[in-house]
Image 1 (cartoon, one colour):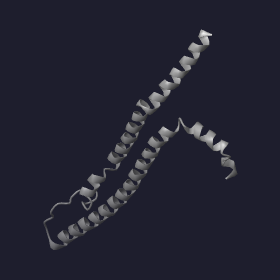
Image 2 (cartoon, helix red, strand yellow; image 1 turned 90 degrees about the vertical axis):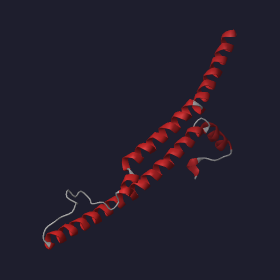
Image 3 (cartoon, rainbow, N blue to C red; image 1 turned 45 degrees about the horizontal axis):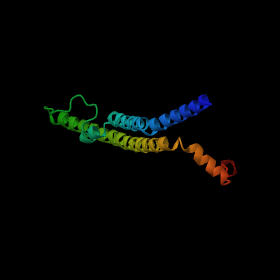
Image 4 (tube, rainbow, N blue to C red; image 1 turned 135 degrees about the vertical axis):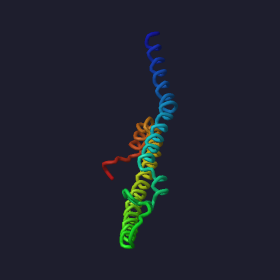
Length: 139
């Protein structure tokens, strides 16, 4: 009889330990992981750097002053205009895509943190829903 009582006590302690880890250290780790993933993606796109260099010449080796005849100077000016236009378009596309990716990463991170809290109670929610007569295959 004492053996069964100890076994029941140990089961309660294991469940208590799991729940305390899940809503304590485990939840903290999930938040940190979501934050690290978001910051890694933010660093990958470097949107702040793209904004600072939005209309800088794009992959142009010589973007400085050009001296020489008017035709050479005019050609250099057109090269710079085209390079800045291409740079602006490419950086605009990357900024938009990066912003969308960051928004999705943030929303998925929030969903993961909220979902982390709901996982242990999901069987209870399912039990209550089934007792109420709800079945997902009858939708």
